[in-house]
Image (cartoon, rainbow, N blue to C red; front, side):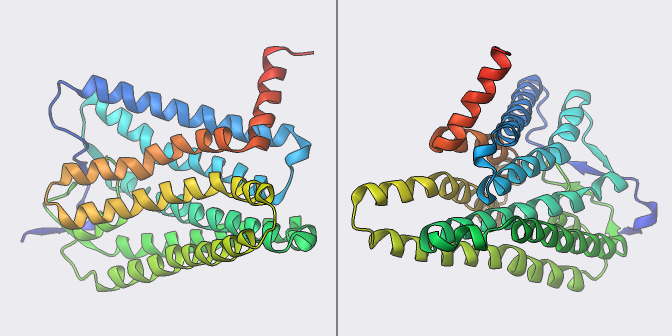
Length: 311
């Protein structure tokens, strides 16, 4: 195959959902609406938590940062896609394609935030008398800072390794944004180190948080089943329901992307699957927390009341 050094590459081609120009306006309107709902919904969650001092706890600290992370993740991918749809231009500059490092940072951070929320529920239900002592601001702020640091270092390392690659003349990416695995697949030079790092990073940054969540909820379920009253069991499970829904949505759609890419030869189907975890999940998170969490529902009601009827 003919290839060029990466210094001569000016752009990649993002295939998107379809080449047919007819439904482009509908797709643009759909994704613009989803993006605006994502921004508005997550902003409301953040403002509601900030304005209600009664829920200034570790659980809602993680939730507010999850909402902020969802805004950042959507903003990293969707606006460029909207520009491409509107201009009917599928190109993405070489430097612009390196924005996958931000997608990595925010995706990995989502894993750690979900794991932090699971640990919080574990401490609250299994060790309620020690909850305040364990889940103190110093701990959960340090956890967030540490997660962000190692995420950034991992994304920087991936970016540096991609910069050393040479690429073939076929530069089509079957996504609406540049994804690390797809960029590596287009390379004509040796990608062994890149693939090893991707595998190790996936095991560490997805496997460890997921294992921590499974461990936490095994103990949570065990503790809840030992509770004598049905009311106590219902209350305990209700505090975990919204978080479990988000976990299943995030990991379910993520696994769906890689399963679909493995079993189908159609790049368009892979794009549809990637939309689920990179756009739909971030849009649905605020609805899940506002509809199934009483504290969050009450905080949102107070916020909307203050906005609609200011003193």
